[in-house]
Amino acid sequence: MKILYFAWLRERVGVAEEDIQLPPEVATVSDLAHWLATRDAAHAHAFSNPAVVRAAIDRRHVKGDAALAGAREIAFFPPMTGG
Amino acid sequence: MSAALSLADPFGVRVQAEPFDAAAEAAAMTRGRVDVGAVVTFAGLCRADLAADGTALTALTLEHYPGMAEEEMGRLIAEARQRWPLLGARIVHRHGRLVPGDPIVLVVTASPHRGAAFAAAEFLMDWLKTSAPFWKKEDRAGSGDWVEAKSTDDAAAERWK
Image (cartoon, rainbow over all chains, first blue to last red):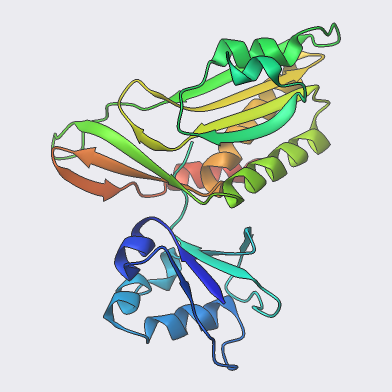
């Protein structure tokens, strides 16, 4: 699964993108965020406050309960501040 | 030669590092047609705000999610077309390093009458701020911090629901 990070999530994780084989029990976006947080200190720091992390599946905004099945690209990022 | 002069489709979005020409974008939208009665052009600029500690902003760096940024703004335009009788709608958003005074974002809307053009431009800006994947990092006297999302922006977007 291709996982992308933006803004301070990217800085905390230390990479903009990674390809990760997910265990079968990781079924939703929330599952993935919690699982990523257990990988190492950098990921734990990035996902320390899940309330301020947003996500997109295949370039569309999703909530935490969205299923990962069939997804090609998952992105995590803070609330948007463009415009 | 400005890219805006060769744009035939009056609907669309662009994400670019280069500055934009607001007047040229508006002119391109109405060139050769007589059904447009109202054009609204909105430009958002980089502002030299002082931080709480008094340090001045020296630059903003805008990061975006390539692909999703364009698609999300395209979805906003599609939604605006469902709500108002628009004859044109364009969003141009810049990325990269910008200094105070630089243009950041442009919204141009066209319709037969002014009400729809004003409302659609405001709708597009309000939703763009909370749903288009862009993030601003402030550069102040050597230190850099990501801009936090504002609850007032969420409220501005919510009122269109």
